[in-house]
Each structure stands twice: as structure tokens, then as C-alpha cells.
Image (cartoon, rainbow, N blue to C red):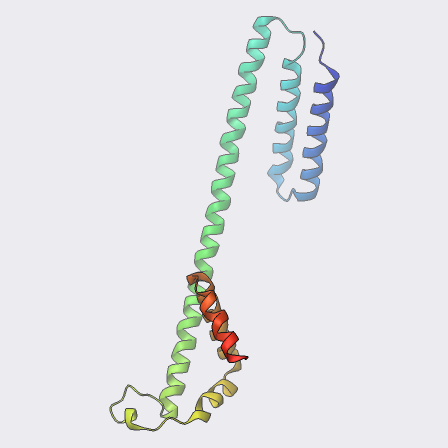
Length: 174
């Protein structure tokens, strides 16, 4: 039995799609070799649809299953490699943010101590609060204030207490 036109057209569409994808997104030397293997698997599967004898069809099916298994294992290794790269990059970024946060908090604590606003000291708790000191701090540290606000906003969204923040905004802007 000859290969049907529907099966031929499906194979051609699939191969053309793979080639377009490789041309657009292929960025590795191994991509071209992998594309050749993928096209060869499509063509081998197409050949298995031809009028072969029963034994030849069984052999062709076994070869196709073997090829698919090998391709699956290569894909699995590629995915694991990409996952490891992404995970390592994520960890590096977290460490970088952690270091910057520690430095920023240390700088803020030093400024607070230098300004005499440290309430943890025994005598400092008796000092009166000056309302302009908070606005001075915000004016002197706009980047830190913005980052702190964004961090707080992210925490509100993550914690699921957005409704509390929305109610606060409504009350403040009535």
C-alpha cells in the first residue's frame, strides 16, 4: 500500500515547522545535528507507513521506537541541563539580593544610630518623636524608601492581604 497524501502532507508540514523553528530559535551548534535526527525520524516513520512486508514493518516500528526513546532521553538531559542553569542563576541572584539587603539595612541602621533616633538605647527611649525626622529620612534616602515600599508591596501581594492595603488607601484618600 502506498503512503497516503494526508500522511505525506503531515510529514512535510511537520518538517517545515521544525526547520522554521530551528531557523528562528536555534542558537547552538548541536541544534543543527538534532534537527537532522528529528527529520530522519519523521522520514523513517513515513517509510514505515509504506507497503512493506509484515516483518519489515515490525522492524521499522522497532527502529522508530528506539529512535524516539533516544530522542526522549536527549531531550530529558537538555531539560535537566537548562533547569540546573536556571536554578544556579536564581541562587546567584538571591545571594546578590541578600547581600545588597544586608548592606542597605546596615547603612540604614548606621544612619539611625548616627542621627540619635536609636530607641534601643536606654536613654533614647525617653527622647520625644519629631515628625519631620521621618520625612527627612525619606527625602535623604529616596532610593532606599522606594525599594522598601516596593518590598512591602510585594510582601502584601504574596501574603494575600491586598484587601487590607486597598481599604487603607480608601481611608487615606477620602
